[in-house]
Image 1 (tube, each protein chain N blue to C red):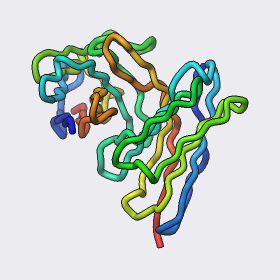
Image 2 (spheres, rainbow over the protein chains, first blue to last red):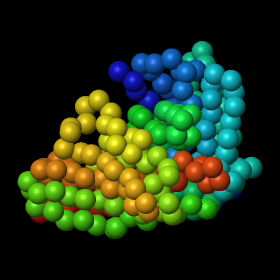
Image 3 (cartoon, rainbow over the protein chains, first blue to last red):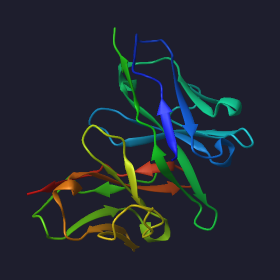
Amino acid sequence: QVQLVQSGAEVKKPGASVKVSCKASGYTFSSHAMHWVRQAPGQRLEWMAWIKPGNGDTKYSQKFQGRVTITWDTSASTAYMELSSLTSEDTAVYYCVRGFYSSSQRTNWFDPWGQGTLVTVSS
Amino acid sequence: SYVLTQSPSVSVAPGKTARLTCEGDNIGSKSVHWYQQKAGQAPVLVVYDDSARPSGIPERLSGSNSGNTATLTINRVEAGDEADYYCQVWDGFSDGVFGGGTKLTVL
């Protein structure tokens, strides 16, 4: 079955960077975009970025532009999300999610979701 | 940026029908997706493209979308339906947009 397995929880100091990995299995890694979504305590889900492993295209939310970098390793079926210049506002659970795209509806939806990686930013 | 508004909470008795709404400007022109998130777990897709259900999602859950409101309807509510539910659209300017979520409580 399709599965996304993320790396473990991280604790970082303000100003540091964090890199979260997401290993995919059960489908052809290059055939779907991989998105990253985060959920801060008490906040709504927030889309951050996507990568299309098939052609290397990336797109970042304007909110995170310049601070987030998405990379991938097709041979390992793994995507990575690195977020820099961390502040306490970045404390959240970060999810990788497989994307589905409908050209007729110009929409993307997400299935499945990784188990989530808690990133805590604290001095 | 595009904004989706959901009621913070809905309570319903077992066996009854729950209707969870998601409001947005002319949301009927967009494709709406719904996710269920149980306590301590990752979200799960329950409806996509307004009304389609992924395999394994019971027919009790259905979606509709028109005008400024999209609705997720859960018939014959069960205790296991208790969760947070989020709507989501893809917007040309805002990209992925989520509602604030509705907490469904089964009485």
